[in-house]
Structures are given as structure tokens and as C-alpha cells.
Image 1: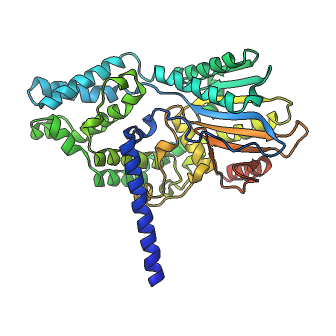
Image 2: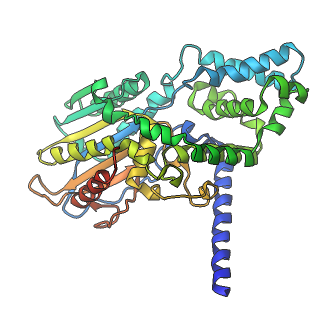
Image 3: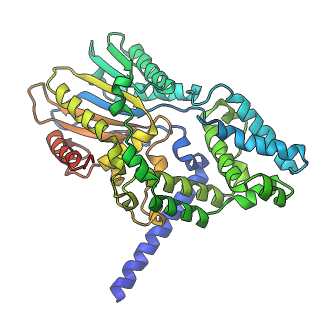
Length: 429
């Protein structure tokens, strides 16, 4: 009994420390609360592990999300503005409310005609990612090597790809570039699955999310500082939705040039910011994580992408100088791919969404704007069939649920066998 008590005490301590560390992290950098709207922070690991003895990098396989963008749904700009404008006309806003209305007007005006477009910051993110890739693995990009790049057909993804390629070409004008964006490749570049989509919004997941949100209501204090008549809010506004979209606008500002001149984060307390993040974190886990509420199969929505990565790598390993395969898409591909691979333990099965935070399932660490997964392959020569590789998540060395050869390096043959069996185990019906 004493041992059980001590074990429970230890788990309680770990959970408390984890919650405190997350809160402190967000206190230092409130932008982290943005979840998928986080502007790419760049790698935290500045110095990578040296190459395995006698081997050098020769091929990179990559999938990256587009860079920072404007919000892509007009309601995300219009809901707050229209409700607050009407309230202003009826004398229902406080002085702070009038000030916030003006801020929201500026944000909305700045995004006019730019829904979903890549921002200038998004351009710079992909140039920097490409530059670091070149500087970290110069052997891959030496000489007249071929770079094969693909994008989804969405303009922000195409522009992310083109800016990365321009950066690589500046560093080595001899590179042979092939780039394309076609419906032809969408079956793996942005796979859609009706069965998994229906399962994703099935009653168990929907009920779990709605209960979590009910348990973490955050809107009343914020809204009461903006409106002088809460009866009016109840009848005309929908305070919970207004808070949701207001928080989205606050989180998103970091991706635009307005980040240098204004903020909306001052409207929220530290606890409110954390609770808003928690709701987003749970939502993303229920959509794409290994939740038993949808049979733990959601990560398989990117099975075609993983199979394509394996097939193209197998094909490229036979070449003397394969170069790189670069792919540009979306967070709805990055997140399930990371969970399918089990990078850094993100394949964990979590039954109680209330424990996500203490188990370090933190979505903002996976898929900020510009997020990427890079497979970097190593060998001693084209005749060396003992190919090793490592995986970088957002340019930081990541772990896999496999036995490494040394440090962050795994044997490609082991990876191939393990994940092809995993993919074959999925029932397509």
C-alpha cells in the first residue's frame, strides 16, 4: 500500500511539474499558445550529432508545412468585428471594447483579399529552413545534384516551395531543380479519407471535446471587459464564440507585419491563455492523434504519404547522387504523419484527454507554421548498403519507436520493415 501511495505521489508530482513548466514556458513566450498558428520558432538544437563513423549524408526526404499565412476563413475576421461594430452602434461597448474594435478593424483590413495567403514572414521562414538544410548537409546539395520538389495545389504551399528553391539556387546555381504542383500528386501530398473524417467527428469524440470545453470555459471575464451589458451579450453576441475568435486573432498576429505594432494578448490572463491552448490541443489530438475514441486509427490518414516516402527513398538509394525530395503541404498532413511515425512519442494512445498536457502531448511542438519532417540518409559510398538515417522534427533530432544503431541514427532496413508492416496492418475498408 505504501508503494502504491508513493507511486501515485510521484505521478502527481510529475503532472504538477509538467503543468507548471508549460505555464512558465507560455509566460516567457505567449506565442506558444497559438498551437497551429505559432510562427515557426526555428530549431532549438543548434549543434547536430556528428555523422556516423565513415558515413556522410547523401539524400534528404522532406515534408514541410507552408510558412506563416493569413487566416483562411472569413468568419475568423468577421465574427468579432461585426458583433462588436453592432454593439458599438448601440452603445454597448466599454472604452476597452471600443479600443479592441479598432484593433480588430486594422487586423481585418490588413487581411482584406489575402485569405490563406503566405505572409512576408512565411517567405522568410522557408528561405531560412532551406538555408539551414544546405548548411547542415552540404554534401547532399553539392554540384549538379537534382532537387525534386512537389507542392499541393494551394498557392501558399507553392510559394513556400518556390522561395525555398530560390534560396537553394542562390547557394548553389548548379542545382538541377524539378518542381511541380498538381492534382496528380494529391493522393499522397494531401490525402483525404471520408471514413476517417466521419469517424473523427463521431459522437464519442464530439462528446469528449464538448465536455472538455465546458470544463474549461474562459469567455465571461474577457467579454465582460469589452461589453457594458451582459444581457445584450447573451441575446445578441454569443460570448463564447466571440472569445474563441478573438483568441484566434490574438494568436495569429505573430504571423503578420502587424505583430510589430499591436497585440491582443493583453486581453487574456495567463490562465485564460493556457485554457484556450488546452482546448485547441485536445481538438487536434482528437482529430489526428491515437485516440481510442476513434479506434486509434486517425494517424493512418497519411498512410499514402509515408508509403511514398519509403518508396521514393528505396528508389533514390540506388543512385550515386540522389539529392533531395522536398514536399510542401499542410499541418493536417504533418500532424498525423508525426503520430503515425511515433516521432518523440507522439504515437501515444491517450484515453483521457485531461492527461494530454501532463504527458507532454503538446501540439505546438509539432506543427507551427513552416513545420517540417526531414529524413537524412547516410552511407560511406554508393556501394554501401548499410544505410543509416536520422529524422528531424522541425530541424531537431527526433526519436523513433525503433532501436537506434547509435545516437539518433537508425538502420533504414529496420525502419522500412517496421513501417511497411504497420501500413499493411491498416484495414482500408
